[in-house]
Image (cartoon, rainbow, N blue to C red; front, side):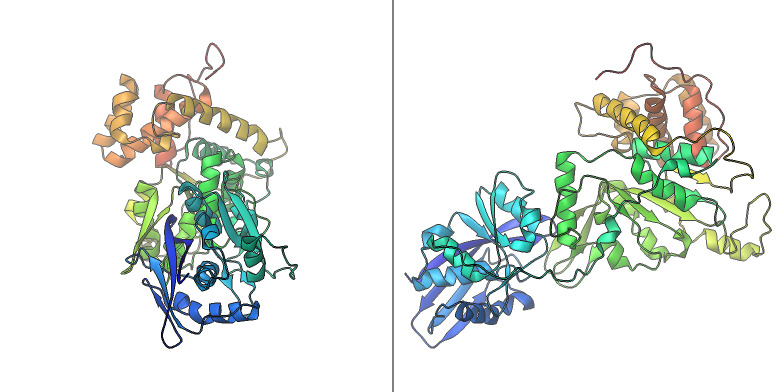
Length: 526
């Protein structure tokens, strides 16, 4: 048989496309041609596959070989097609049963000695193969852990081309040396959730209230204050207040991390919301995604369904920070290249921390600011108005007074997380027949039409809007925040006091005690 087919998967962003790999052997001078819009790394597969086939004890055809990758109009990038190319070529030579290749997808890079090396994006590619109806997939052994996270598909982790050929022929699987994990370009510590507890934070009543509301409703948070006041402490403890990811969310987040190279070799689903904290010197590409060839996800996509924390936000380049505008509204980011457009999910909770000025003492009760008015203005303008307008909660964090901590014990993460979980359950029940899950996701027109405020609460916000203290976007965000405070208080609808507190949380005014937040007459049971 001079023609054979095998199957692999191409990724454009997180979207997987099946790629049919055809190998044709014809009369003519020995030459291997690869067609189908391959990139440089894929074009080199001709030499990798030739060496791997020969070093695996097989004979490489000494005739004219044409390898086609379909669809031909889809750009192909990466080295994970090597195994499928080698198997289709050997099937065309007649040394393999081509029928066995039609119901199995294959991914993996070949070493010159026939070893199968790990690749990025194995989880996303396995998901695409399963959704396309494949029941089996061959992956590098180092990627088998993440591939097995996908249900309803059998995963074969292999160490070498010899093992792949033995599986297809039904022979005994030869033993091979364990593979050596390749160094990762991105640190796995980027996604590590800080193991800290909220009871470490003494005082800071308003700051604790702010992160509780942010976790309950998914609201973006802007903390500003002098150095050492506790901004970073509060931000790091926000991650522990958020509940575990649902199964579908977990698969989505894990697929992004697989493509970014953040999953470990003994991969498990990412169950906790990720906590990504890029340095303020991070480049635009590292934050948004991109790179040469096929774009890769950036920090904002790695923070999908979790927290993106930017400390010292005014020190980040303003243009880089402003790229967050569109993802904050849409929940995704599109990276455009000449070859393709990659779309990555980016629905994250943004936390910004900033000093009030270069010396850090502006606006503090006891500090003496040494900055000139011009320096102070320029520093505050480094975070643009459109970015600040998208921050639901804006709080000034001042150092705790001396003697704080000698009284009653502050609430722990577990205690506050229980309230957050209850508030989120209320939101899931309220939006059970819609496409939304959290208050922060509900569009403004739907919010005003289906979940209106009472007349008094509406009047409070209309006065602030008329006097220029609220923008149209800010008006909707205060309403969403009022519903979150309502869920935390266990009430059926926002009250004027809760609406006023929501405005105070957004504007940065001092919080006043709740006056009418009374519990429900009966427990909430969805």
